[in-house]
Length: 238
Image 1 (tube, one colour):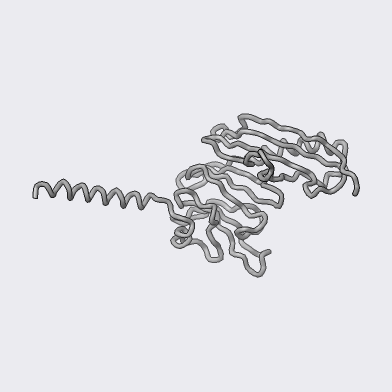
Image 2 (image 1 turned 90 degrees about the horizontal axis):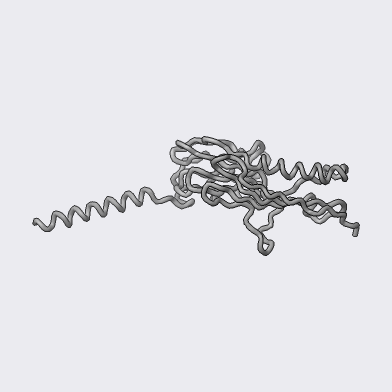
């Protein structure tokens, strides 16, 4: 009987350890969708769930009249609460053009951006504390200032009639040797962005520029900015 007590205690400790680990293990998106009490007409974004399964983007379920879809929501799943609405227009269903996407850095930092036709837009970093948004870092606002300034001063000054073409961000992920448009490395965000005023290859004055920068999450500002104006050329009529 004396020998059985230590063995029994070890078994209890082992079982308790397994139970704690099971509770701490993050849920898969499928498990989250089954247990989260989300509003009717919404679904949890498959790739938007935080590593601990606590936060996610909600997408309205596509219906016959997509113009009347409710907005996308960034939420806490357990207990359910809305952290913020994403965008100022109607929502986008999962997989739609212009849908908001998320990339997590741990469980308290997430980058949320919009997937446009050619590339990304509206990148912001959300800091979460005590199940609430502590701060929003406006990365895209600073990015746009750099590109818009170059477009205006270097291009529109010589081609004022091209104002309507605008700055369009174009993904370069399929270009050999290219780097990710953005990626977290610790407390820093590395950016590699490219913009074009006519990515559809239309004729006339053509402008491009690129940015390689490092955003410091503690400073809420750039550590490094390498802005590279591209060559301005005239595309001939076919």
